[in-house]
Image (cartoon, rainbow, N blue to C red; front, side, top):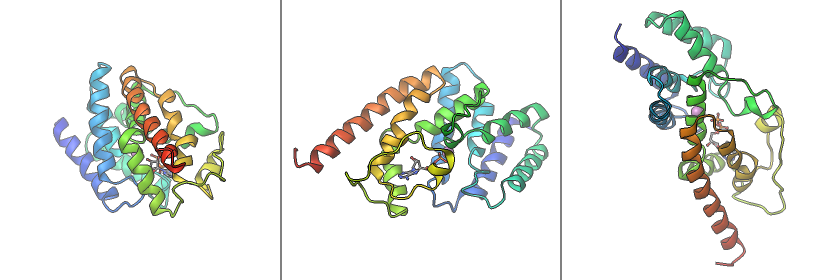
Length: 218
Ligand code: ADP
Ligand code: NI
C-alpha cells in the first residue's frame, strides 16, 4: 500500500470521527495540527510521514469525544492494521496519541515522548496559543457560558488533572494564566520554541490591551 493511500485512509478516519465535533477539536484544528506537524518535522529533519499520521489521529480517542476510550483504541489499531501500518509504526502512533493531551502533564507525569510525539504535541500546543489560541479560548468559553473576565475570580495554578477537567467559575481571561501562557516553556522541539516565542508575544499584547481597556486606560 502506498503512503499516499495510507494518509488518505487516516484522514478519512479522522473526518468520520471529528466532523461533528463542537468541542474545539473539529477538523479545522486537526488540519492545522497536520500542517504544523509537517513543518516541525521538516525543521527537525524528521520524516514527516508518521507525524502527519499521528496528527490526523491525535484526538480520535480523546475521552472528551468518545464514550469508551479502550474500544476506540481497539478500533483504531484494527484500522491501522487493515491499512498496512506495521507493528512498530502502530506502537509509535498509539504511544503518541495516548500521551498527548495537556492534562497528562498537569499532575507531574511528564512522559518522555518519541520525536514523533514531541512534534505532534508541540503542534497541538501551538494551536492553543497565539491568534488562533485566543480565538479558540473565546469560542470554547462562549460555548461553555464562561464569563469573559471577572477580577474577583483569581487564576488557579498547579491544578490536578481532575480539578482542571472540572473547573467551575472559569473565565476566558483566567484560562490564559492557568494554561495558555505556560505552553511556550513546555515545547520540545527547537522549531516549535521559536514559533511559540512569537505567539506568546501576540497573547501578551492582547492581554495588556484587554486589561487596559477593561480599566478604561486606553
Ligand atoms: P486539548 O484537548 O487540546 O488540551 P481542550 O479541550 O482542553 O484541549 O481545549 C480545546 C481548546 O479550548 C483549546 O484551545 C483550549 O485552550 C480552549 N479551552 C479549554 N478549556 C478552556 C476554558 N475553560 N476556557 C477557555 N478556553 C478553554
Ligand atoms: Ni488537538
